[in-house]
Image (tube, rainbow, N blue to C red; front, side, top):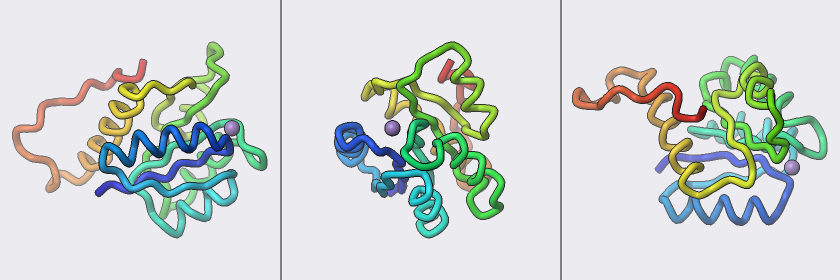
Length: 143
Ligand code: MN
């Protein structure tokens, strides 16, 4: 069972996304701000992190930068989630070290597709875990 850390300060978003992920068979770890998100990432070593950008302490982008500069958390894929679907947000998120980007409100299918894609990509870094008949993954699925 893949373990997903969701860093989110909005209880409604947390409930909704957790419900979607748990219903799809993922284990969800919750953190309600950036610093507790960093601590949870280091302790739990999740397979994937969903990172809200607007958090009450450090921003989700700063948290992503810190995770990507620490050797033990750098390989964990991070998908940034933000309500500010402004032009350039995607580039800012990717420049901060996030591997992907989703604009809120997050749609169920879009979320599950992105989660599956990044879990598959991170496992593809370990060639032995990839079945020989796995088709090539689209590299622009989030654009
Ligand atoms: Mn927020």
